[in-house]
Amino acid sequence: MLPANVLQTELRSANGSSIKLSDYSGKVLLVNVWATWCGPCRSEIPELVKLYQEFQGQGFEIVGLSTENPDASGQAVRDFVRTFNMNYQVGWATQDVALYLLRGNGAIPQSYLIARDGRILKRFIGFSQVSTPSQLRKAVEDALKS
Image 1: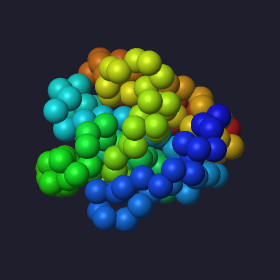
Image 2 (image 1 turned 90 degrees about the horizontal axis):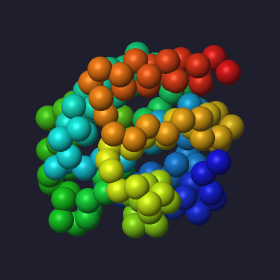
Image 3 (image 1 turned 120 degrees about the vertical axis):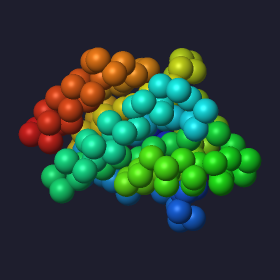
Image 4 (image 1 turned 60 degrees about the vertical axis):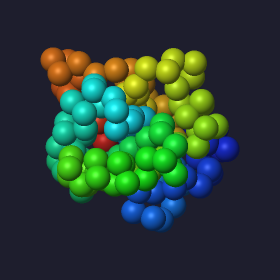
């Protein structure tokens, strides 16, 4: 389970609103930690866009959280969202949220698949074009069925 302080933290959104991970309770949620400068993130994000298009109508949501400074990277992140057609919620992780999610492993991208009841089902570290898309798809399908 994600702790209450992580779920309740108000995070800045790239579209100017705010995000709380708790807003997605009752849904299957993929929290993706990334950055605009991250090469593997650039490979992974088109796969996440496809996954979201396919499953969003079934109670699946994605929140992409950049590890960058929101004041310094605001325009870069908004441009990235537009360039990559990121059709899901995107914002910035606060330092506390990033520290919790990365858990001492600074490698990005990292993703957490969270069940409707808030349990962390799976953690993905890094991205492999060969294996990650199919692993993500299977994990999402399984989570939506349970």
